[in-house]
Image (tube, rainbow, N blue to C red; front, side, top):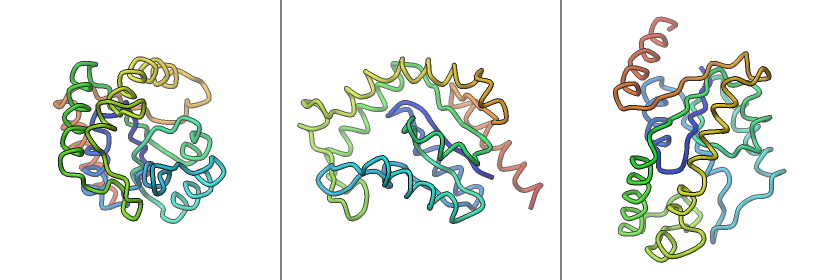
Length: 183
């Protein structure tokens, strides 16, 4: 099984992707971990694409967490299912704020070896704010994924749109049951 969990920052895609990977007993791959370097420096597209291709080809099954729209030719080459976590704007914003506060408070390193940690200044008072990013991308992501679901070039992919916790729990139960039946 090869799944890409997508959605706006703060919506809960990492939490869902980790849960799915755990339930399916497949690797969890975080795109942010592939992208970010020390001191909040990103990788070049060439390096990101190569790292992503190598990581995805290293195992038959995986759950990939992340958008990075420009990587679709690589990440969707062999994906089977796109899970779009599409919660309402206010819920997503509330979750983004809560996560930003928690990360700034704990100062936990986000991606091992990078030293990258959220701060209150970065999270709430800078142009790099994840909250600002959520505000700027929520509508754009929604339009893009709605278009992708109906785009003929992606007709071979299965799109699953999850809008509520009830839908999410039902999807997890269904996919876990399907995977158990294929074992």
